Length: 72
Image 1 (cartoon, rainbow, N blue to C red):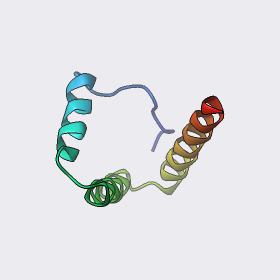
Image 2 (cartoon, rainbow, N blue to C red):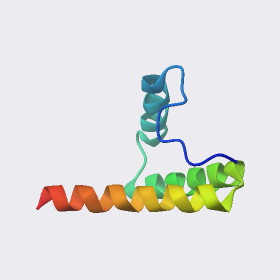
Image 3 (cartoon, rainbow, N blue to C red):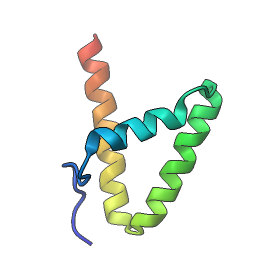
């Protein structure tokens, strides 16, 4: 499997974003976190490649660190 793709693969990325936001609408913080966890596990299984999953986890963690640094 190729390396992690970080550019959009959606024909309509705004629609994909809206779908994710709408899926969370009306959920409590706890239910929203549970939805995110379930989605992550489903998509990780769909990817099925530990190298790509590791790369995605590292990229996500770095994004969080960058946001935390920028907020200081």
